[in-house]
Image (cartoon, rainbow, N blue to C red; front, side, top):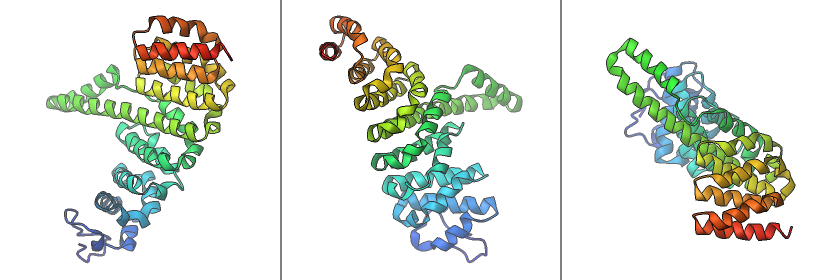
Length: 306
């Protein structure tokens, strides 16, 4: 509980904190403080409360969202953690202004981006229309980010660690591995948010064919699968809309992953891609996966009737 200090939330015990220990006005005062230490205390309180009882921070949703754009990364990170919990329990509370959340999803920091992706992933399930206005930025965020931490990045950070402390090299390498994994996870998560928007409203992605097409050659199969599903949703409603990407979709028939080959076949069927019949016939005879062979044959039969 608060110790009565003039600083909002001063003396709050996070270990035993419950909603009864603070009131909304005191939390808002902390969140709006000019002191970053006090703001950080406010977002930490929100994070702890949200994890224990999301209803306790529901009235503070807009105030917490505002802190995602805080100048202090520590404040913003705690706000993001609170919103992950809140979006899981009450996604409808965040369907208003998602601009700060999308900003989080565009961060260069894998951990920050992953938090933004998790929040958007929770919201888009029941409220895809709330995310649709930002779908172009999400596609760009996936396309412009790297799925791995490059060797040059690693060497740069190791060199900096060696200059400071030889014993820090191992810790830096481990941190870089974790950062790389967060980038991979967040890219795939954001790509799946785009799929959810496309399935609800194909028109929302209709102008993004050129931006989506390069994702079909991405090294991450999860990103490729999401791109194929997005094109599938678009082609199902308007086959001709994906014509510029048909060649790139057909190239996915050569992927090692059978699930990707199957999704490419399905998308080509929706697209009415009659020019791919011969390739589908070859696949129907030679693919190692029986399900893929069957789907390729069925799709080729269908396309010959179009």
